[in-house]
Length: 273
Image (cartoon, rainbow, N blue to C red; front, side, top):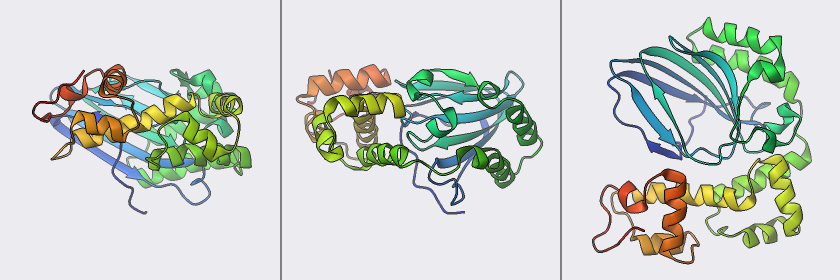
């Protein structure tokens, strides 16, 4: 399978006290319009491990199997950072959808699962339970992918042009650093602001402003942890903020720390709000 680029949105991932083995795998061509990647983590830890992320604006399916939890769930789009603690031994297999595209499986507005955890069986019934049992029966990541694609492919079918249009727009925000305001996005999408807001609420589960802010904060986290981070003033300006104070408030609200506290070595003389 092809290699994936490094993950974005990881805020904290300390050195584990024990085994923590993770893999990411790409989907097959028929599933690629819907799925960004699959991932698998196995752990055997002497002490708990707590990771934190500011996730992409997209849904996930998880199968979690450990001594304390055994579940198959859907994670809706998150409006803020989230953390997870691993302890003892266990394994998780995940499906990270591309933005928007889980709606093809959900059949309802993505806002209905924003910030929610929903049992997969609620959505798919007995096939979800059978899939979870099959996932537990193998430790081979490629086999887990094959089982998952057998579950999803007949239910996803061919992506609709409407979903693809909004998905592509969201993914342009992710890589287009010039898109820093909703006005920029409205001009790019060639639809009026009200239509854009309604489309994002239905297909993404977050507002256009929230999606733009999410990807700006991803970029901010990467730059703040770089060997030679920019000054906070310069970083705020490059991300389209009117001033450092607005950037600092957004960052702290999403991440839980000020930019200066998050960066390992803030630039001398630069104060984080």
